[in-house]
Length: 331
Ligand code: SF4
Image 1 (cartoon, rainbow, N blue to C red):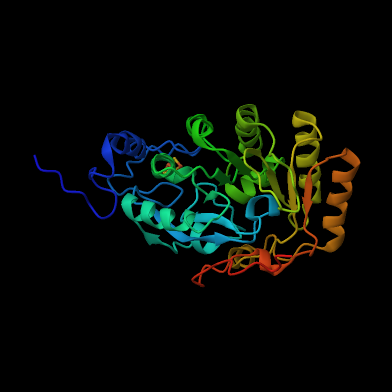
Image 2 (cartoon, rainbow, N blue to C red; image 1 turned 90 degrees about the horizontal axis):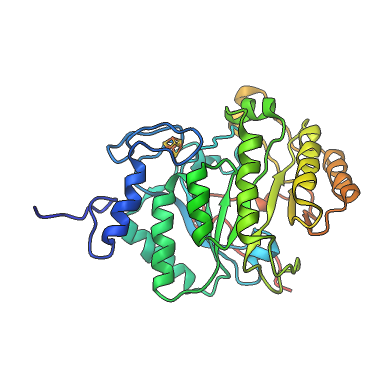
């Protein structure tokens, strides 16, 4: 039988090979995240993440808005994936994670776009919300390595991960940037519909730290970017300082004060927050200061605190051709 390579993720063409067929099979009876929907995405079904087996992207671009250890001076080579299995209603990337914005790409088109990106001297390849497209991401990383690029691969995720994806990811990913969003299971259930988030995120984090350690080299000014390890992110939510304190205490208890942390203040309510009447305001400076005080009391040693409280520049604009257009300073 003649095989015809589809433009959008069909049978393997010469570039795709047999590894792709094996990876792609994970989209059948999909269990790539803890939702374990069991749908056949190859047949065009969608689970909670909202995506079939056709990869969709929001943007592929150098990103200057990550922490300096990731963006450095030349930017982080970022692939924003469309859809999301975590689906927090307040998602700051809601245009691509919840509202369907993005465009379909075949594996070959994705590879070509990423190859062009990594030729721009970016510091790393940064895969944003990659879990539900893990088969594509795994194939992509292998092809990029096979073409001789040695830049670190970054898995930039919500922390809500299936064991099978963590297990595969630690084999090929150099840097993990997981969120730890909630330690309050009730808040997790209200925001993303799964009270298991705290324990699942901690289990994934243990495995990441066990595999790659803490982010290093640690040069918070970005003069040398990270090559390997874990940097944990936490976005402080309005009216939920207690959740942030629980997160910090649990991280300290499990991983000690050497765990690199980024504590973010840029929360901005989304249209869904207005519809629900929940988390419907910016963070107050006093709330952020309370969380930062706890970071200091616990003695965390490697911490990014946002110097410009609530800076809107940290939020991407996915209607623009480049969601993070330029460095604000390169001095
Ligand atoms: S990746 Fe999507 S379809 Fe697969 S289990 Fe998760 S939410 Fe369901």
